[in-house]
Image (cartoon, rainbow, N blue to C red; front, side, top):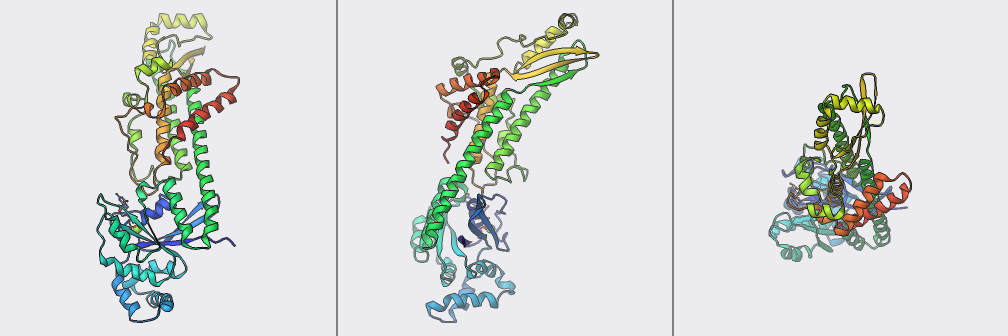
Length: 463
Ligand SMILES: Nc1nc2c(ncn2[C@@H]2O[C@H](COP(=O)(O)OP(=O)(O)O)[C@@H](O)[C@H]2O)c(=O)[nH]1
Ligand SMILES: [Mg+2]
């Protein structure tokens, strides 16, 4: 039989219990609220990894009448070995008593065998009013651990340690908002110390958890590489009805082409969210700031792109030969003539000037329409913009606690390409980007090489 630890996450209202459950079950759909009393019923959230339950956490309402409950327990005046059954008696006798509904809800999982995670706010001073709660929990004789959460800026951790040490076997500082893979592993290790039977099973759970994390990194690397390759090699054909082609129509189809690239980026973000189990990111009308800085904007270029020096040294300078992107494949002379006579060449060039982002090829003409092929992207700096953006997004999601409910902050000052690439890797990446566009043979080899570079960047994340 495989059994797993169960924990009731308990404490005073508004101390971050639900936030802790969200971060430790990697579930961002849990209700977290700044109004106390939001959680009325206990609800369990398992951490499932690779089909295996690592543990189950009960999100519970906060204590409301701890002193009254303790008074009731104490008037029974029993020896230590009988205290757990007196606590059980309290729950059974008050199961329908509205007055104690919060206490009953939070104690139920405990008398049914759950261990205890007691949550306090270490940014507020310790006060004896918490002693009734801790005392009640001690009556259960269940394995227990206290987590000190720092909600505000002040630090009373030492006071809390002294007090909590009287009641709980383990006391740890844990901030659900800053939780990540490393702090999670530390909590798993703490849990294994709480009960002898758990040592072995938690060790294997930690191994599974580590593998799971590796898998997420692998999937992210795969996704980043595939997305970039898709965008770099993207070519699409359009029907243009006018002949000769009007500038406005080149504009129109360029917009469609760009919209596709934007869609690829959004699809990428969606897939990254799925890999890291962030279900709530696009809900609640929370706008990600990263998407306020539009992919094709000047701002995006200054935040995510390479600077002039980089452009020259990496050979990613682009758009130099405006107009040479026009390649009249068929329809040849007539087309050229048509364009020239319609005086559109100039128009197209301006359009190209604006859109020198991608290759434009006029493919041919059938009755009443021209076929124009757009892509692939020729602006090597733009490719770095896309790459920096998807890496930036991945880093944020991969290191984001599931307790967070705000959008993703984008620091607009920093030149992010400096953060992820050094001079050498920029050069090599640019070289690979060009190879990806040119290569029809040895595709897999180049793809593998590209993935390896992306992995090096992702492994630098602080997770
Ligand atoms: N800044 C900050 N806010 C926190 C932290 N933990 C909880 N909160 C906030 O405190 C409020 C109550 O949190 P919640 O998890 O619902 O507490 P619960 O009532 O104990 O379940 C929410 O607005 C949280 O966003 C923390 O570590 N830092
Ligand atoms: Mg709550």
